[in-house]
Amino acid sequence: MRVLVAIPALNEATVIADVLASLSVAHPLRDVVVIDDGSRDNTARIARAAGAHVLSHAINLGVGAAMGTAFKYAVLNGYDAVIQFDGDGQHRAEQISELIAAAEHSDIVIGSRFANGGSFKSSATRRNVQRFIAWVTSAFARTRLTDATSGFRIAGPRALQVFAEHYPVEWLGDTVESIVLATRQGLSVSEIPVVMNERAGGVPSQSVFRATLYTGRILFILGLATIRSVPPQIKALKLREQEAGA
Image 1 (cartoon, one colour):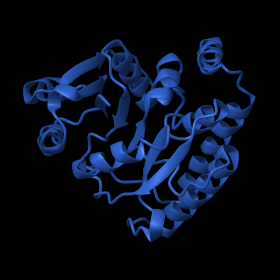
Image 2 (cartoon, rainbow, N blue to C red; image 1 turned 180 degrees about the vertical axis):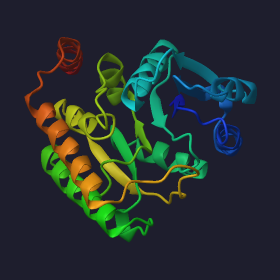
Image 3 (cartoon, rainbow, N blue to C red; image 1 turned 60 degrees about the horizontal axis):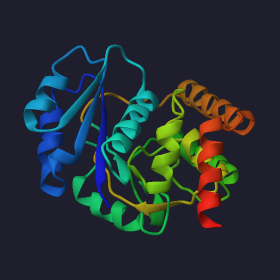
């Protein structure tokens, strides 16, 4: 497969060069695109100088919109699969090959921090929220998931065609609603265990109040996913697949 690595980035000038340097060891930068999502610093310039392709949004639209741009770019440029990779140094480039190998057997493969007893450091409150979201998403998707909000994942050929036509842009929709959207189209979703670094910047919210708001938004997104009608472009795509298989 021709695999594109897509990096949504917002004001990551302090770390993006290091991220791309580590990534270049495992994947050629000619097959890497940085989606500069309205950064106000030198993220785009640094990424371009490092050898990656860069697509820029005029304003900050969110990770979902950034990945939507990446999926369209992938289809237009003949790629078969897209790996989402964080620009903050959390994901490990050497595990890209494991995602690609697993994609031979599943349409979407998620790199899970918690599969097989993974021990990613997280506060008790945050971990309980993550467990609850994984449990609810698993019920919607009818498959067991341990890390539904992980942003380290690969969308294979069939998933790429679906996501290039329609990808959720609501906050966190890129991780959670996209799973529901994919499974509603009959696509398979699986996980592999991965090890992630601590974030290079930022402080995760850990208060009970913020965790409750976070959970509420996820439940709202899942509710939307169940009542949202399937976009006509995706219906047409599924019909073409059925006709091709007849």
